Image (cartoon, rainbow, N blue to C red; front, side):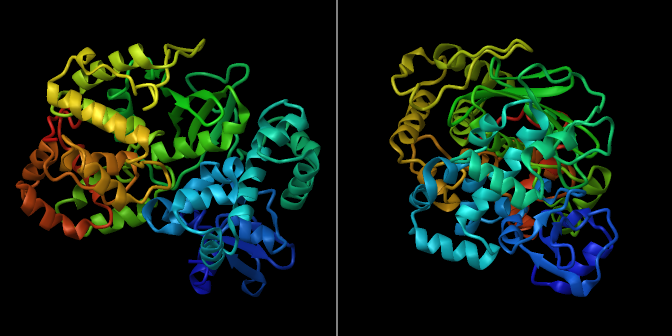
Length: 504
């Protein structure tokens, strides 16, 4: 979008927050870059330059605006919508792969050479993987500087910097302030709410010692009902819970583990994070944003779905529905199998037993969480006879565990969605419903569709839509590429949208 100068200028002049994260505005006279909704007086059009990423603006010599904090904008919705190399690379960079494994590690996961990845990212985003990762490290550093009392040396290494000198230089270059100045600016009394930081918003709980309190931005509108309702209703005992108005769960992360609490607010999501290793901060935030689908563009989604007169009343009644996703695609794949042809309550019971028997224990002084969901490696020696479920589903579960453990099945954030679907379909007991559920919630495919789902077919029939799977697929072609969102609107018309019995 950054190449459409006229459209970008209009967005800046109208301070349109819908375009935050889509592009960044650099101002030649001040040498700063802003989000489109920056509250300051818009610059003259001839002084504006537009960039597709914060990293590109930084590389061009612009520093982040202190007023609108463009580095804390919602992410571009393209990286969740698209499935090409650039989108997969961006999802992996957000998850911290470059910091942990370098550009060669990123290339290995994507199956391309480092030169190809550099070339494609530069062509589309104006910055290579190192610059994009650097911009993310700068944002992580800012969060730690402003929300913790950690010594600056610990902040530097937790944010992923190789040295304190590099940390100091990057913070000065990006924010035009020294780290100590950033901390000082964040300490004064009441001030305007700042994206990325939690202010004194009344809520069900406050941050406990050692817990980071953050604000996760999103594009308006956002309807939290199906999002948090689904997560709470399907919560696995010990791993997830709804407590004091917040959804809480444990997180398995590259350097350690964590506990997160997420509560909806009118213009942001309150996020409380407790981590055993602060190097996991950026990855934990990225996973929470993916789970809540916070980088979606509801204007684009709802605008297209409204063109179907059968769906339009549903969208007008409750716009901004998101697709509830997951923080761990491997975990969700196993849970999808446990939920085949049983009620939500039964699926929770099966998953809870698996967690108690094989999950790693964690401490949760602030609630009732007790375990991490077991990894495929922890389930490698699983005895099928210990599972209280039909023999065929036992075989399916152990088959998925083996495929994930061996690498034959790849469901990470950088996975190719078409390849993952093909890999899933070859496993015994994995039918179209399970494949599409994993694609929708595990892989984040916005066009995943479950036409055999009984709840979906019942809702479709109630609206006068075709109710047979084949006819529903034909009708749903007009909803592409947002069929997963159409599913959320249809499920919401059913009294018990998650208590349906899928055909696996």
